[in-house]
Length: 242
Ligand code: SF4
Image (cartoon, rainbow, N blue to C red; front, top):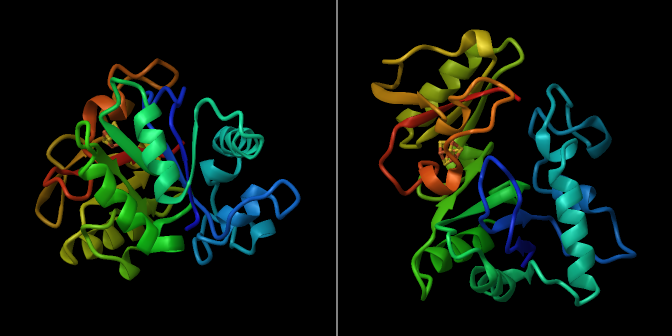
């Protein structure tokens, strides 16, 4: 299995919930860079940087932000066996992470980095384990850019409508919704529709964690909201491009 879980997180948007990375292969200190292994799950995505074999048409937070640094530091910690906050590899590591997670954690972020199609079998197994956790069940927050390759119960369909391609984004969002998916549609600020907007007849709302003005701390975290669980019958979600 190529799933690595970090039990705790300081991510302000998600809140302190377990974060799961999906990778093409297990990382070792003397093997390929973690970014390379993550990129193996994202082949075909228009956001994937050129250096990883992608089109690099738009920025991906996973390949430029703090996500990779947090992952790398947890991987190193786990490799040195001093991993206070890491869970570790595979289902066992995931279950360890759930036990070490914050008491307040009610969800897991399945795919803090990497796409579920990279190891769909593992993603399904881990999602089922989260929903059946001995303590309290965890909701599973998960998206895929490759929604055509998965089932609506696996992940929300992640659709790019930013970088001036709102029309294409709206059309793809409609297609995904018609195929039964809940949609996560990313748009440039100027293209964000107002209240009452629908995708294929169903409400689409702005992510509650993005309702505050840019730069101000969100009043709601994913751990509070948990709408991005594909197995919930909530609205579609609109995101401001960041
Ligand atoms: S809609 Fe809710 S769960 Fe989804 S990203 Fe926004 S805050 Fe997180």
